[in-house]
Length: 148
Image (cartoon, rainbow, N blue to C red; front, side, top):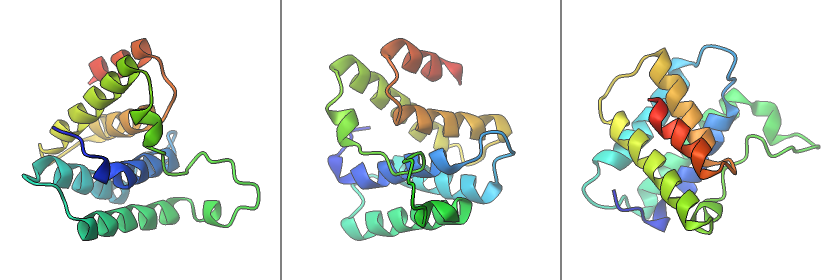
């Protein structure tokens, strides 16, 4: 897939929702439905989504994040853990890290077009999205890519 910076806010919000999921509990079907709907919408789109569609999907992700971690929106001591990811960090990363992150993103977009998932796949989607927002080196990113 060719990545367009038009999707920056949408991908950043996807990573923010993934960061909001409690890793130690079963992943709620509602959260995964939202994540997979948006990933598959991007993956199956023949042309770029328009700005209105991107804003609507981003809003849907923000509503899901609010449902998962409502206190984060009013916290006086913000830690940033559930914030949307700033995709400029990806675009400005070293070339090898950027290429690995885009490969990981491409992998989960392709996986999302299968239409169904199970707990193991759901965990992988969340782990992959979180990994996109971390400052991992290429070796760590490669291990996540090869995991699925």
